[in-house]
Image (tube, rainbow, N blue to C red; front, top):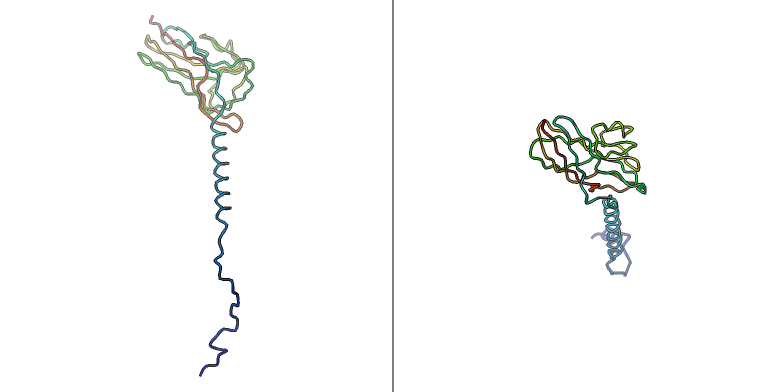
Amino acid sequence: MVPLSRAYPQRMSTSTDLQVRRRPRAGIILRVGLGLVVVAFVVWFTTSPAALPTSQSEVSASTPVSIPVYVGVFTPAADFDRRLHLSGVKVHTTANTPVTVTPLLCVGGTVGVTTEPERFCRGLVDPEGRTFGEGDAIVLEVSSPLAAIAVIDRVRLGFRDGLQRGTLEAGSGAIVRVLGR
């Protein structure tokens, strides 16, 4: 015969509480829901910057074959108080023959239409990675080896403004005629 002390463990639970303990699911669900709302707000805020100024007018320009013309398509007004960190400038052009359109940043000046932008800008540089603000302008260099008509839509600036990022239309469109000789 086996002694009782060996058959049963010395320490047995004497608890009479038979309730199943519930985990605080409501609190967890509330915290997860609140976290998702905060994340959604941050995503919305960072991807929804204020619109940039646009115009319904179009800039008209003409130039002889193989001579580039520089067309100012976005010059912010004096009350433009934003500093945009540009990641690029997108240009959409429709033309009847091949046309080269290159976006440039006119630093410290503005250009209407010219073949000599150096007279109006302290510097004419690739806009990618540059800062854009009051006193600067987006200029398009347009040229073609053949006679052409180019219709250029408003530029789209890819930028960061503080915590916000976006790609938005800005300025005016343009119509450029490249004249044969």
